[in-house]
Image 1 (cartoon, rainbow, N blue to C red):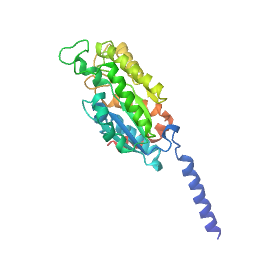
Image 2: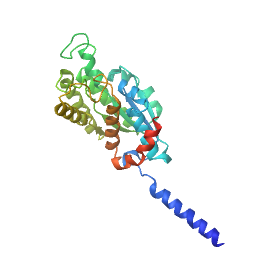
Image 3: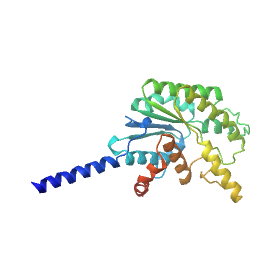
Image 4: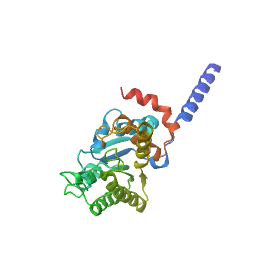
Length: 254
C-alpha cells in the first residue's frame, strides 16, 4: 500500500510538472484552432522549411500542442488585392478560420512599375483607393464571420529604401494601418524591422547587396525569420517563450 501511495504521489508530482510547463496562449490565440494566412508569392513560398509561414506553424504547434492549431497557406504568386478579394470566399472564409492574416500590397505597388513606368503609374498596378477598398472589404468580411484578423504591412520592394517603389508603398502601408485601427485589428509593421536592419547593415558595412531578400522582394532565410519572429511577437509570444522550443523547431526543419 505504501508503494502504491508513493507511486501515486510521484505521478501527481509529474502531472503538476507537466501542467506547469504547458504554455498558455496569448489572448489573441485563445480558442484559435485554424489560421489562414492570405498573401502573394512571399506567403506561398513561405511554406517551405524555414519559411515564415512554416516557422509560424511550427512555433504555434510546438508551444501549444494541445490546441491543435492548423495553419493554412493561402498565398498565390503574383496576387494583388484584386486577386485576393476575388478568391477570398473560397480560399479564406470557406476554410472556417478562427484567425486570418492578410499580407497584400507588394504587387499592387510593384506591378505599377512594370513596362517602363518609373513612377509606378502603370496599368498593372492597383491604385491606392481601389487597394484600400479591397483590403477593407476583406477585413470586414472576415470579421463578420467571427474570425480574428491580423493585418500585415507590406515588406520592402527592393532593398533600396529610398527607391521609388518604397516611396510609393508608404501610402499603401499607411492605409493598412488605418484599416486595422478602424476595425480594431492587430497591425504588424514589417517596415520597421526591415528598415532598421537594412539601414544598419548598409551603414556599418558599406554593402549594397541584399540582406533579407534573395532578389529584393522574396525572402531569404534571414528575411523569413524576421517576418516570422515579428509576427509571433506581435501575437504576444515572447522571445523567451519562443526560445523554449527553438531547438525543436530547428530540428523539424531538417
